[in-house]
Image (tube, rainbow, N blue to C red; front, side, top):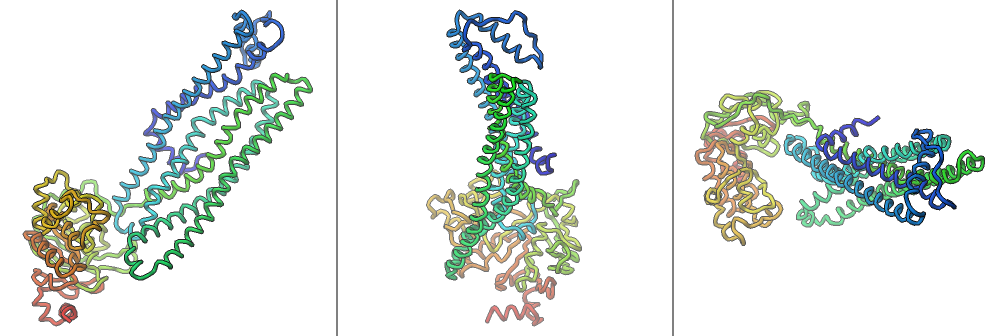
Length: 609
């Protein structure tokens, strides 16, 4: 019985039906010619090297399973009598042998040729599925998972699955067929000897199966430990400045050494057991061969079979050694591949909590207002501490709303809900009277542009970063967007201008330059709703001035939600919402809130100090 995971893994074969059929057909031909090259040559050699003239038996032998040996000898004698002498017959026999082996290996190559399409195609399909799934998952998933672990699942685990698939396909499409044909031949040669062989092979199978189960447990440990190491490497590269600044190199080196040593011990045990499987299975098969030779010799001594038959039998049985060895090795790869597939499946089967309704409304434009009504939210599967509590407010089109408050008060969460990165626990968020949960997600997000505190840039050209997600953006439009964002002047000074590669996360640029590129991206997108999430909080005074001017240009004629720690940047907001522990505790204009002498007034006083 196949396990559910193995069945699911094999379901990927449905996209490669033609390759599977060709692989099966050419493996079948390979097996037939392999058997022919061993089993049918023996009668010819026996007659050629026999003393005296080759005599055709007086009685023609008829074909039947019980009479196949006599039939083969009769046909060999008839064919050999066409040749003038034995030397000529041997010459032609050698040519036939060469031709048969040529065809056999051609068939084997074509079978492998189609197998490579299956293997690499399934790897591609898995990686595509994983990548698509990761793109579609809600942000809550990434808050719980390590980035390095996800990278591990998309690379190393997929590769392990490939090896596992190869083992499965070798077993399914070739080796069982190979063993079936050869065992049938052995049964035809001698039933008693073959039954003895089957008992011995069964014992080998039990031993190999027990080793495979042990390897499966250890493979899971090794994959999890490698995932930890990759995550640590990723975190180290991302935080290398902080690590050096805090002089924490020795601590992290020791920590990494501990994880690496643990992984090393697991892998040494794994490799030793894996490497043991092949020589041990070969040793066991040699034991069986010796037992077969002993038992076959016993039958020869008692004249139940001839020595020629025993030699033919041993040749055919020896050909079964390699398939049994491959099955032994494949069982290890299958166990390891299944562990990796389980890790991949854990991501593929994650339930996406952000579900789009079948008949979702397409939001073509924003024309009226955004309304939060009694909105509540919690991150911990809707049963933890509430991050937002009964939030209600409206934003009329063209107005600017500012959100202020201490870190952790729920400001960023509030705007994340508007983009539907998460779904609310209670209440509703409406745009033009339509609940977000009834909208087509892509059309909703098309109406919104975000400029965040941490500029999100990619290892690509300046132009491609600005035009990210906007097909067909012309050079002229990109340049105009950069002028509005105060970015054109520094871009033209770069080595290759707009075609300059900016490195991983744009690290070749300053913080202000990176931020102005993200603003240019938002300008080019030209969405009616704009979210600014502390866009200037990490910049120096000069960069802040340039970025703030760019933001002022960006906010013209747009509906803006601004999250700000620097309160001087939001004094002209149409309304300021002051948040504290997930609630709106004050609201009004800058002057009104100063006159109230409440929470906002204290925040302003603290910043002035």
